Length: 367
Image 1 (tube, rainbow, N blue to C red):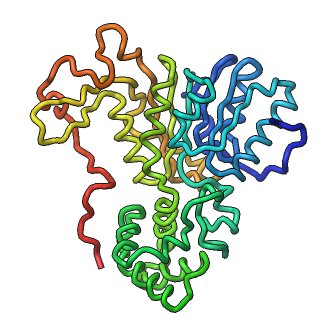
Image 2 (image 1 turned 60 degrees about the vertical axis):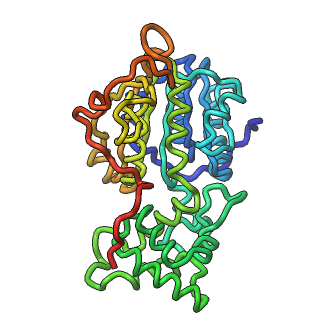
Image 3 (image 1 turned 120 degrees about the horizontal axis):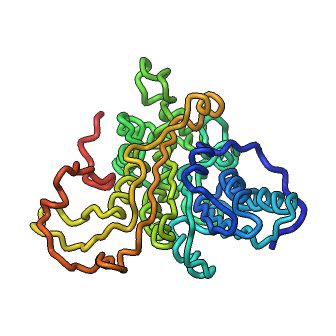
């Protein structure tokens, strides 16, 4: 239930806002989903074009950010005299987007946006433990109400498992060295804060590489954060659920900030566009996949130099877009999961470059 007293709102610069709006094309009366609400910057811009007859639905697993975003959207409704029904927000993991929308009675969407990754609010709040630039506890949970903290993960995993996490989720070339330093620190009792973890990564790096483009702790913090929040496992279910609810012609826009996210989004959208998921060794396609979306950009869009100069955190953003096509259950198209014609696998593989899963067997980790 929204109140009339807005909370103090931190400054927020939505990434690639104009590009998102150009693809989403929100219009009065539409129903749009922001599956990763954050501080509500994108959502507020969409709401301004939906109201007063449309509805903006927002999800976020971070209760603190959700409260701030709800206050932002509430303030916009009060300022313009829009009805409170224009905004509906839910405390939920993006992984559960489909279930939340169904339980809320929302069965069709005109567009949806997913701005994956960690938010500026989380990075700028020392008590959340997401940044190595400020001292704070080793927490890193996007949902502070439960789950394992970064401290628990770092103290529970073996050195080998730590190296694997750093390599797989951070693509950190010095993963073994950093894992060794982490284990040494926890034995000495000096792995208690973000500055301790930052020091472990710094000490593990060769002196000649400590002052490069990326801080030595950047990939370590990314990897631990992804492991704590199980971020990658939520991407595909969220995208598939949203695509299933899109009206024909409705757009799904994604923003990612590192190669692991972007690769998974690319693979999922390719599947939704009809790319076969069968095992390569099978002589025939048996998954019965049918195109549910049309890819609108083959290569991800990136921020303009002007935006990167204004907001440096946008520099790694990658935007991908797809649009819902006619329901594959209608007309001559087969329904999802139905095998109408078993086609030779070569028809799917022609011109296709296989992209290995991020969860495939890991190569040898360099020392």
